[in-house]
Length: 612
Ligand code: M6R
Figure 1: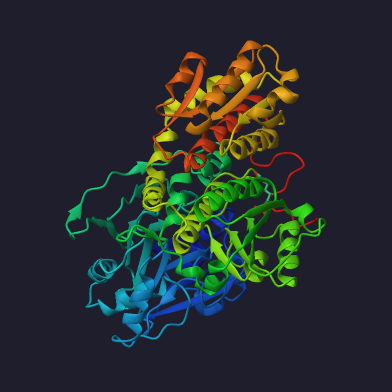
Figure 2 (figure 1 turned 45 degrees about the vertical axis):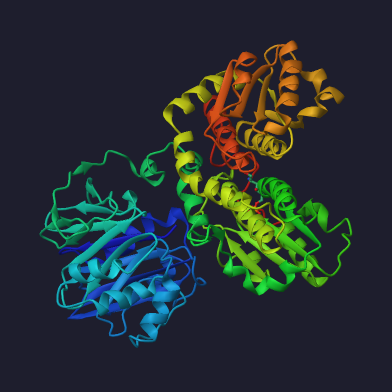
């Protein structure tokens, strides 16, 4: 995710900004930049690559300045290049801004600003519209200009602006993206995250959505949306730097699990036409012809992304009526898949760098099959080589065990399936809009699901699970791939062997392993097969297995058979896998925690697997 720093005071601003940006490097980024106030002008330097690369560009003229802003960019709109890096300047160069978030209506604003208003654009980013909007509304007061500018904007933003006409002042505002003010002694700071502030101050004020701050070395004034002054509480941070990097959580994995409501919101953003209640994937227009005449889809991926592919297969076949084959990427290229016209390959990769997935992409393209990539990393090799990309916009994932990236891959696949079902006229009338509403409810439902009560229920079961060397995950239908993902996650970080089993297969062999107390996690969210899953639970109960059931509201019959039941919020069965996987992530996390294993960097595993 992008990082922001701002400084105004009597120190060497360039040092404060570069130091702050370095403290945000752990979050992942692909370019960096700073803008400083110097002799009535704003001077800017930006570089693709690291903060160290940016430092190399900074000549002497960047010293002896006392105010400025800096940014690390994680590319979303536009590649990671020097031009696309922040800060972005207005046409006159009198305004500079840094921005985290996504401007949803940037296309129409760009058209209007470059047409009627005559502004010329230098980057491919959504952000640049903000620089021109602030300039267009500037009449001697930066706060007023920013207030007027954001009124034009739809989307999410943490925004800091500076004007060459007000050299000591920074103005900032936030909506759906964090921004914090650090209060110093005759100096003040702005940052998107606490680690950037900690070496200077522990006194902070957290901006809430719709709040503005005007920051000079001497004072910080807060305002609401209407421009009325606000009183804000100062919050004393007592985290050390390691805790601060993890947003106060003990591990990146838990932080990333908790970020899932926001990550899903970002994946959905701009992809639903709310008025028409339709999925809007104009970004896939270049594949329009291929999508219209499709007769078969290959989905190819590894590990967790492969599990997303299995769910993708089920929903694409159900909603769009197109046959789908799903392959583990390391097998795909050696099994001589039969390629033909009217096929599409979808590769899924969080990192966009997985060697096997990349090889599958290249194989499909070499046979004339178009490739759509679902990935989280703009500028990754997969994103550069695919014919079209569907970015998940989950923000960087640092823990090796994938959580939010997986959830957003699922959301991408659901959007795609509904889109294809609608454009081919296959989806049942009304079902598309029902599912769209279901997807829109997800951020709120995920938040509710991650409640303290739910977590403590899971922790109790994990205290039992951690005493075992083996566990089973059972599910039928759409629950089976979720069981596979739950088992993989538990293995990865707790080192407990876990096997996923299609519940109906239990009696064909695995039942022999069920003994008194053996942990068996059962996914039971699919009404159509609920009775059958209940029979499978009885088979486990009869042998003394310790069942933890994850189920939906209205499935209360399970209560009579199972002591540990985790209820999901009300959800259409088709969408249930997006919610039901979350308790399995928490089971993996809290079991690993109880067992004392290295959660964020499990033994023998790497975040990005770039070798075959
Ligand atoms: O970056 P990718 O999505 O291509 O990675 C694929 C797998 O290596 C990855 O999902 C792996 O299984 C994770 N560690 C799972 O948590």
